[in-house]
Length: 80
Image (cartoon, rainbow, N blue to C red; front, side):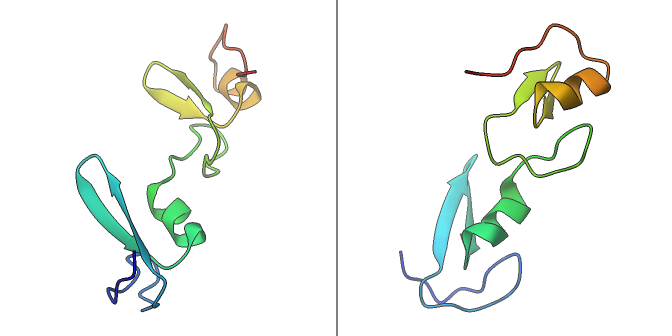
């Protein structure tokens, strides 16, 4: 979708910007990098942006089982 709205992360106006609708709210970005910075969840242990599946426990999300274990979670397995 072409739009002339500025990217909500960096403010750049780009003729190939796109929109993402998440939980009923529409966001405009000029790149996937900006979309990830704005929308991707953050690991509860290492603070990296989770752009894959991640693992969840008690409403917390982690980038991997290693980080979940380091945060004290038990019994989680990586998705296969």
